[in-house]
Every structure is written in C-alpha cells, then in structure tokens.
Length: 231
Image 1 (cartoon, rainbow, N blue to C red):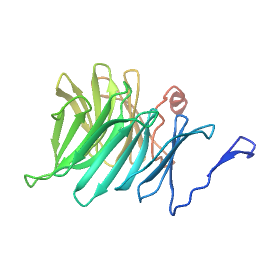
Image 2 (cartoon, helix red, strand yellow):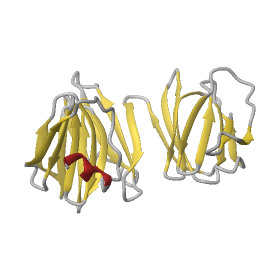
Image 3 (cartoon, helix red, strand yellow):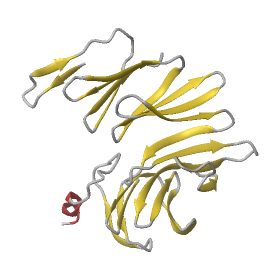
C-alpha cells in the first residue's frame, strides 16, 4: 500500500504479506484487512494505530467516525466488534438467531445496527441503538439499510423507501422503487432512486424532482453544493 500526494509522489508505503487485502479509508483512518482475520489500522501519516489478529474470519470492516467496526463470521454465528481510535474494544454484539444486516454511526455519533430475524417464518428487520437492548423499530418484509438524524427524529432508509421515525412512531413514509441513497440538508430530504433525484420537505411532500442523464450510485452528505443541480 502506498500513500501519494497530489503530484503522485510517494509519501509512505507499507507491505502486507497476505493474499487479497481489503482497504477502507475515511476521515484520516486507513484500515487494511484480509478475510483470515488480520487487520491493520493507520493514520494518514502512516503511523500504525493498532493491529489485531482475530481468530474468526473477517467478513467486512469499516471506519466509523474514528472508530473501526469489524464483522466476523464463524460456524456458530456472527459478531460485530467496534474498536475505539486506540484499538480498545468498545462494543461487541454476538448473533446466533439473527443475521446482522448493517451497522453505522448517525450524524449524532450514535451507533445503530440493523438485523434480520426469520425465526417466525417471515422476514423481520429490526433496528437497534447501541444503548438499547430491545429494537427501537421493526418492520416486516423490508430491509433496514441506514438511518439519518432529522430534527428530533430519524429518516429510516429501507430497500423499499424512507420513513420519518419520531417519538417512537412512524409519522409518514414514502415508497421509492430502486432506491439507492438518502441525504439530509436542513429540512430538505434528498432521495436518489433509479435515475431520479427527488427533494422532499419535512412532511414528505415532493418539492423538486430531476431525472438524471447520468446514473449515480450514491449521494454526498454535504448538500450545499447540490443546489447547482437545480440551476
């Protein structure tokens, strides 16, 4: 792995003696890992922050606003571990009857987890917060993909659309076919689905809609620059 400046000059490099390395970069943190359980975390200056050789296989890893999350799998189930900036274990969730679907930090820095439960013969998707033992929201036949802080509530993104969750209930919901991503800027909610970009107000009503000549895969979360799209 080599770290280059804007002129393509090498600032530093590191060598890893394992096959099929995976790389995640975000917010000045760099994580390199392989499926066999080795993970190395560096800062942007090339200093090693921590390294861990795990017993289980690493299915995925991601940077979580300075923390590092690792998704492990073995014959007994799956585990998600979150390490702090210095490599100290902050949280460990073990799953045997449920399948972890995703984990992330929202804009307030709170960890959220979504899991799938099929014990009753139906697909039940559950949303957990790091400080709650019971799910804060559940939905049947939809997959909870992510949440976004929105005022005193949250926008819940599923594979079917979005929902405004506030005061422990759904205030409104909208279905969007082929939904890809959501971004929030103030009270405006940007929804990317298919080849369309739509802006909603706080009541879920459409303010603007644009059909894109280019197919985008995701949205930037800083939407001050997005105003240029509508001009």
